[in-house]
Length: 358
Ligand SMILES: NC(=O)c1ccc[n+]([C@@H]2O[C@H](COP(=O)([O-])OP(=O)(O)OC[C@H]3O[C@@H](n4cnc5c(N)ncnc54)[C@H](OP(=O)(O)O)[C@@H]3O)[C@@H](O)[C@H]2O)c1
Image 1 (cartoon, rainbow, N blue to C red):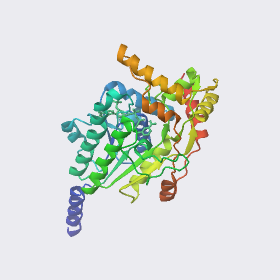
Image 2 (image 1 turned 45 degrees about the vertical axis):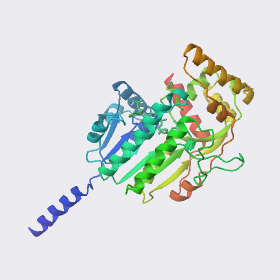
Image 3 (image 1 turned 90 degrees about the vertical axis):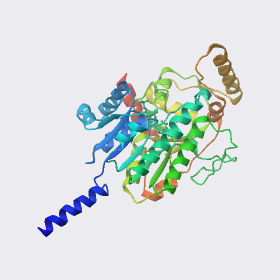
Image 4 (image 1 turned 30 degrees about the vertical axis):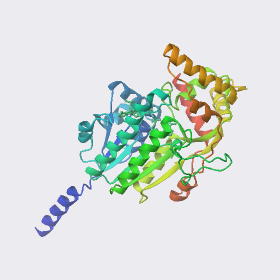
């Protein structure tokens, strides 16, 4: 009897302390979120994911189908809750019994007139996720930020790492400003008692989002034929590496730290050429100089003002297309002994899935 009672009180205490793990994923219908869900389904913990529109759920099944014959069965194991990151009452429901949160939802845009929407989703939305994580005594939050939210050196030869300070004086893109603002919300949460980790991936290479305007659409655009390359250099990482690091960090005792996730720094010329060759199309031959890009973004602006067309090239994106930013990912490699997939392998794997999908 004594044993039964103590067992019962123990169970009660565990319940009160919310020890039964349950995972919440935001942005589950996106590139990172869908791959993360597939990975998390290999574990035993129940998974809840938020979504906004029915039509985007099919993208998740599509990604699952690239890697599994049981896409529908796996998809149905997830508890899908309709909620926007700015809809607090719906988020309240989504947070019930949650112990671990992966916050992947974000609005990715470089169009200057989207600044308010970017602030609302990326900064205010993250503040909501942080506040609810605190009020629901979530054990750990993993936030997906970006290398864009890390500072830059004036000397392009110097590698950028987690210690490189962000400067508001720099000509930062509106996306970067709002992702940096979101990070501040996460760090604020850690001051209020939340355990959190932040990952800062480079350009993420993954399958399934070929026409969304995000990193997945590089493959479609290169396949369609890109006449120009630019001289800029940036960091790249495979989506599975991002997911594996996130999962490992969540299971580890590491907390309140940020990590750059970059497998390799590559020039756009090199990335475009490697991808074109893997896709069996001609690589771009001509360089778009900063002078040409300067004309390009001004014409794009004029087109937008005169005809209301969507901005495709802003001053900042033109600048980053020619800037030389190289990242050092030693911190994550040393912290959890992580080896990144070579980018050649990643390009090859994603290109193969792209061609299969045609
Ligand atoms: N892709 C990259 O190269 C890259 C590089 C570095 C960092 N990141 C970061 O990685 C994370 C995931 O990026 P991704 O490439 O997976 O982006 P994605 O494919 O565009 O997915 C974005 C996700 O966020 C959701 N979302 C957007 N606004 C929302 C809102 N108001 N409420 C709830 N959900 C909302 C979207 O839902 P819907 O399906 O309903 O639109 C979608 O599930 C983001 O934080 C991004 O900043 C991406």
